[in-house]
Length: 278
Ligand code: 13P
Image (cartoon, rainbow, N blue to C red; front, side, top):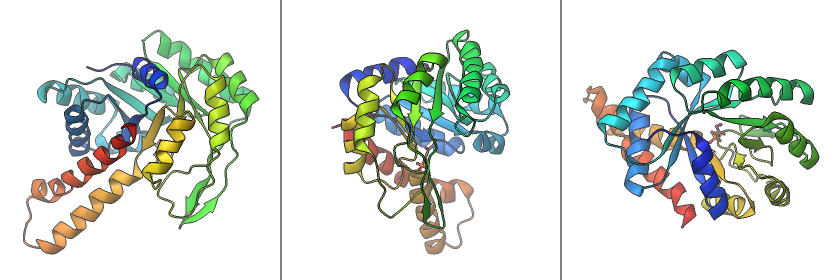
């Protein structure tokens, strides 16, 4: 069933478990995530970036794809369709109108007050449509050619003020992770995670979950993270499998066989991540 993220995350926060957001890129990706999470009987958040939405054709395409797969595959778990890093009120409205259950509005690059005002407008529209809202405060670091530039970690007072003033349902804080696969040592601030989680009533979201060993993800959850976003790790295992398949089978041209040769790798990676809840 498609639901907003509030209920899924509330239960997880209470039980100190992680809910994963896996980002989707196409039909096959979505299908793999739904089937594996349904097999494991865990709720899942399907994250879709604006660029992935553009790639697939638009908000309505993505929503119909997810709704139809859930029906035709008899998916019984709770699934939340979530706009990842929405960049404007307009795009959040488009997602909500198309049937997304949750949106993230990312105004983290704006000055505090402007971020608050933008998020408040999104919350107003979302609440009227029973859609949950995630927003970000602080600024995440970035990686470029495996070089790490540090971000600015979220400040507790600012975060509490931000949550109180905006009325959001979950908050993405900068705690030392970066988007993408960074192989070096990251300086994750577990104390900050704990401090934020202990003082917040809403769930805390970890962006940039790829490239982190399960023990680190587990430590983040034990410290107070409720939602973990994973994108690059699935892309990495899928593309490795495809490359191997094409090399070993140069005469196969059936796209279903080529694309499908990456399914098991995606499913295995999903199962391995979910294992941290055990
Ligand atoms: P990764 O690509 O590092 O998994 O980050 C995903 C993410 O945070 C999406 O919002």
